[in-house]
Length: 107
Image 1: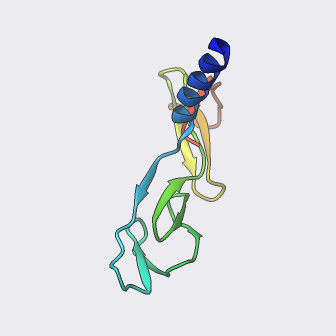
Image 2: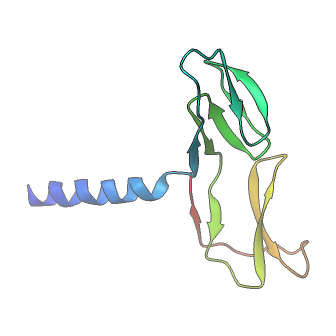
C-alpha cells in the first residue's frame, strides 16, 4: 500500500511539471466570437485554432504547442521557429551551430 501511495504522489508531481504555458481568454456571456489577444483575430465560439505565437487555442484559452528547451550552455539560445512551432537551440554567435539541450519545460 505504501508503494502505491509513493507512486501516486510521484505521478502527481511529474504531471504538474509537464503542463505547458497556458492563458485564459475572456469571453462575454452571450458572445458568438472570442478575441485571441496574441494576434487580435476573432474566432467563433466552439472552434479551435493555432495562433501566430504557436499556441493551440479555443475560446476558453490558449496553451503552448511545444516545450521550451532548458539545460543548455550560456553561449547558446533557444529560438522558436514560428513556421514549424519547434524550438531550436543554437549558438548566439553562430546560429548555424546547434547546441545540445538536456531538458524542456512545458508541453
